Structure formats: structure tokens, C-alpha cells
Length: 178
Image 1 (tube, helix red, strand yellow):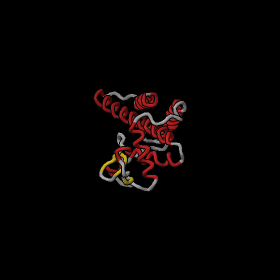
Image 2 (tube, one colour):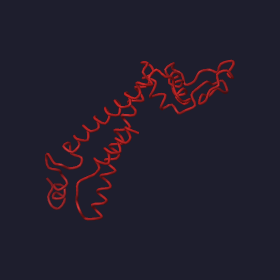
Image 3 (spheres, rainbow, N blue to C red):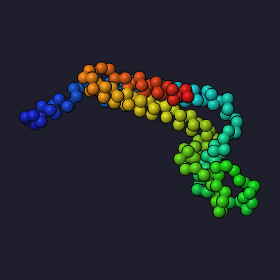
Image 4 (cartoon, rainbow, N blue to C red):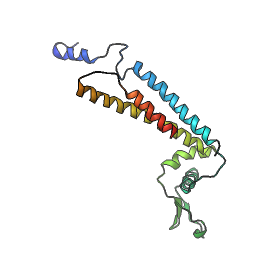
């Protein structure tokens, strides 16, 4: 080991086994369990509501564009050639000019939807994306709450329990229900 002041400082920084520090496994387990439950809640709630609308066509023209773009990617293309009579195929959010028939949006949503569209369940992509967002909101809220607690405790000189978990949970539930 190292002697002197450096060794003492290093010993203080090392966490004892089974510690209850913010990043320790014993503190993360409830957060991981909560993440799984929030994901399941969000996906389940979205699927329960979505089952009523499953057989309906897309409601907005941008949804048609995403599906068209996903089908284009599934065909192994970035765009299709323009039809000889393009005026009959004009639609919102789909480019139909200069010999190109393609989705107007950036490819992220279409790339996410493509595998779900390939197995004929494009709505699963939306359900899983929603569940993922809810979990991310939980973790972001948790971290923001911990930072707020640290700043408050530093300013007041008091130490207290972290409200990060509660802030993350409330934000995630709001996100799941909204």
C-alpha cells in the first residue's frame, strides 16, 4: 500500500463492502426493479388502449410517411423511382419530385418501425419506444433529484435523504399516463 497522506485519502475514498453509497448495487436494485415495473406498466397501458385502434389505418399523414419510409427500407432502398404520372401520387410528407419517391423525414422513426413492420406488428415498436422513454425519464428524474438534493444539502449544510427516486418515479408515471 501507499504510505502517508495519499494512502489515508485513498482509504477514505474506497467504499467498504456492502456500503450504501449512491452507486452501490444495494441502492441500485430498487431502481432497476422500478425500471422493469415502469416499462411493463407503460407497455401494458399503451397496449390496452391501443387494442381498440389496432385495425384502424394511420390517423395522420406523417404516420403514412413513416410506414412508407419503413417499407422502402425493408425493400432495401433509400427511395423509389418516381411514377410516370406523379401528380396522381402526391401526398403530404412524401417527396415526389425530381425522379424521387421517398419519405420526407429523417430515417430514425422508419428504421425503428421497419423490423416491427416486417413481422406485421408496427404498433409493437410504438409500445416499446414508449416504455423505453418512461424508463429513461425515471432515471433522468432520479439523477436530477439527486443533483438538486446535493446542491440543497451543500447550501444548507444539512444532510438528508435523497428525493431523486421520488422525483424520477413521479416524472415517469406522468410520462406513462400522458
